[in-house]
Length: 106
Image (cartoon, rainbow, N blue to C red; front, side):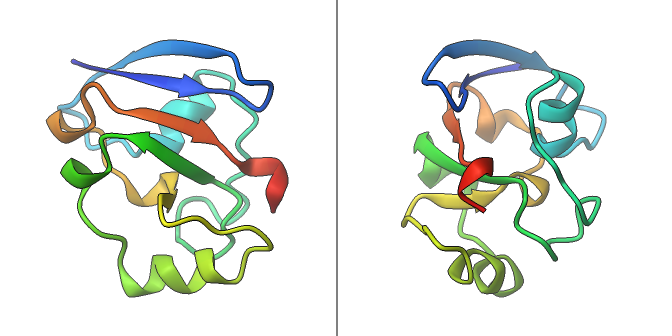
């Protein structure tokens, strides 16, 4: 299990615990935790409606792919710490990270 912190659209923070042995994406865990993540494309990196910002722990998550960057760069508001939750797998690298939901910016 890994634990990470989610900051919602109102600035409230909550720790989330998720299994790291099921191949789940961060988007799937956020949706299951009832956060307002649209994920219109179902996790294919085609819509950017699962836009998040990694406030802490970005270096351990690796770099965004070109496909992911194409979607992020098309958003009205894009940050160096922006990622798509559908492209981040739940793994040990996510343990201790702090992410901020950015969904309403899309």
